[in-house]
Amino acid sequence: QKEVEQDPGPLSVPEGAIVSLNCTYSNSAFQYFMWYRQYSRKGPELLMYTYSSGNKEDGRFTAQVDKSSKYISLFIRDSQPSDSATYLCAMSGVSGSARQLTFGSGTQLTVLP
Amino acid sequence: ETGVTQTPRHLVMGMTNKKSLKCEQHLGHNAMYWYKQSAKKPLELMFVYSLEERVENNSVPSRFSPECPNSSHLFLHLHTLQPEDSALYLCASSRRADDEKLFFGSGTQLSVL
Image 1: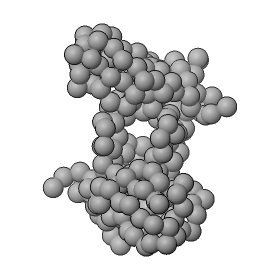
Image 2: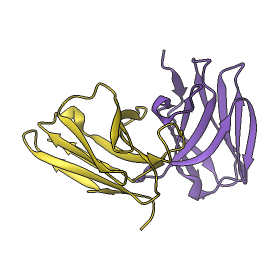
Image 3: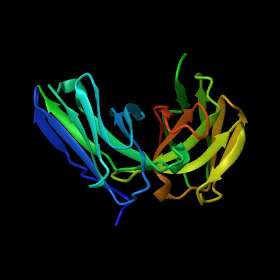
Image 4: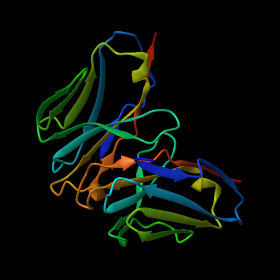
C-alpha cells in the first residue's frame, strides 16, 4: 500500500462547478498537509498549507484535514478554466521538514468553459 | 529575475553523453533540492543541500552527481544515463532545510535515447 493515495483522474468539470480533490494516507504521524498546483510545463506551486486537523479557506479554495480518517480534501468553488492543472497533495511528519515530504501522484483537473 | 530558474527547459541525450542541469534561486533561501517527476508517479526526492552542504542523498545512482557551489546555484551532472531516467527534473528551494514550504522551478524535461 502506498503511503499517500491520490486518484489520478483525469477529472473534467464544467465552469462554475464545485471541485473536490482528495488524498488518503496511512502514516498517522503526518502533521503538515499541503496542496500544490502544477500547470502544464511548469513546476508545482504551493497553493494551501495546513497544520493538523481542521479547515482553511483562501478565496475560492478550502483545504480540509480529517486526521481521524486519514483523509484530506481540497475544494474549489466556482471553478474556472484557469484552475485546469494537476493538483498534488503532500504531507510530512512531526519535523515539518521538506526532506520528509511525501507527495501524492497528482490529480489532473480540466475545467471546461 | 525572481523565483527559481532552471536551464535547459528540454534536453535530449544519448546514453553515452555527459550533460548538466542548472538551477538558480533568487529568493535568498538556504536549502536547495533536486526532485525527479515521472508520469503518474509521486515526486521523488533525490538530493538536498543546506548552506552548500549535501544533507540528503536518497539512494540515487552515481550516474547523477549534484554540485552546489553556493546557496543560490545547484547543478545536476548527468553521465551514462539509462532510458528509464527520462523524466522531468525539478529544482526547488526553501528558506531552511527544516522548512516544508518548497518553491519549484519549471523543470528540465529530459529524454534519454
